[in-house]
Length: 608
Image (tube, rainbow, N blue to C red; front, top):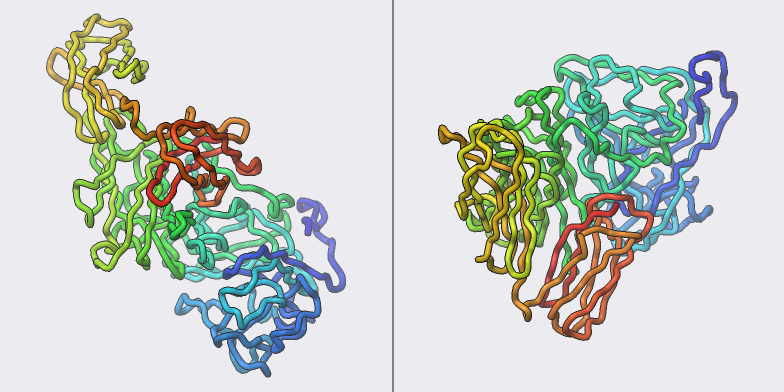
């Protein structure tokens, strides 16, 4: 419903009589945070509204495509009967900060406006066979209620400590950033029904205002529409700014946002802050990855390296959780200063099951001279430490077993190391490229003031480098120069290179790191994704010396959604295959997996 004040110009407009409000729910067996955008006057019961008036009779479905079954009590009190008595509708207790069942003595026969918002488990419409439990067919449904809609301004009290459960009072999307906040942090926790694993029931997404970049930072969401725009019928959590005193959150007609329901939230790529996003994926027996949870750190000189109101604490979900451990707290989003010295991000993982998982680390704009990052795995030890791509994606696949150390909360951390830089020389470019069976390293410089020489350093892991070649500087008193060196002793695999510039006093700086992949073996099995770029919604995949067989190809978005899936019949030897990416998937980073029972290959893609 639009702003009835026309942007505050006409404050006397009213809506007379009752209005039917509908909320479409997609086919997900999951919990939802739902609000009640009508007044208490003449409001229907929960039974009449969300159970289509037949609550207590689980087999009754008078209006296919509408309503939901609600369990948790006796038939006489409006509850449908399932395979167990687990409550599927809850209200929030602001004292204990937990969700509790609605009063069993009245059940769903109470007015739906008795509470401003609910936590409702939705299996589908009322055609769902409760006796089938988790194996029941999924269906879409529409929840509706008829009453006097809320209009005008209202104020919601926000608890001094803990989180406060708030429902959108309007039958319209609203812009959370535009709400009036008195000692309320510009931070929200919303619910995404599509995360928390392939069979999960949803989880919290955290959004917090980034004043440096003038955008909301958010932890990873599987649903594209998760944003600052709170939809009609949606509820959310907020907290006070100081965590000590109570606050208020003001809703006004001009806060309504006409495009909110269809708005697709996109991260702004041209930001001032550096970012590192860490997502936890659950991988099932078929190799499919599903987003379980995620955290985010932004780096900027305007931030503080202490936990304050600009950080967002973690709200835990039912199953797997990931948090950033800082000052004995778990954070979903943290703000830190730009890394100028050694630093560590401590990851805490909870409720892991005995299966395979993946940590996907996505860094944006962090690749600067002298900075390196290493993922440390306490369980597998130093031999499994992994160098992190500071301007791209790094995947860490790990398995949980019966050993308690494999599911230790603090198993993983990310250690940053910052080298000291002291010289005025500028590296204009550095590249490494294959020439026949060798690798040529080329670099260009300017401002070669008092530079004595350059050393080419090589590495097999991107962390531990050794000197391979030295060359004297051509222009010790300034100017621009070009240098090159050929690495003739390269084995198969990924090679890392960097340049060390040394001045006349022995001080030095490092260039950025570049890589090049070598596969010299004519009979070696190999797979190449051309340019690692999706062009015209297709990616070209070349197979070299791969055994005959059926291979499964899957392409996943960063949120764990399958963008492409197919099976190819490979005749053996060499072949090229074009894989179609569904055109409605947005530009961004994706992961390709090719596998059979004996073979598994991963690579990252960019869709432009």
